[in-house]
Image (tube, rainbow, N blue to C red; front, top):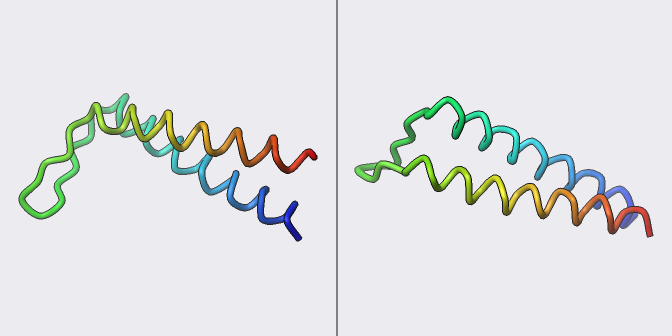
Length: 62
């Protein structure tokens, strides 16, 4: 069961990382209420989500 969880969470984090990369490269604006989310935040989110994706898939192999 834990193996399936690692694959699912790794896939979800991979998709999130890909979306963040696309947003950062294309400079898409994001507005949350009155707050404009800066594009540099997507680079940080890409690193975090990408790291979690790699971690999930590495833990699945054990």
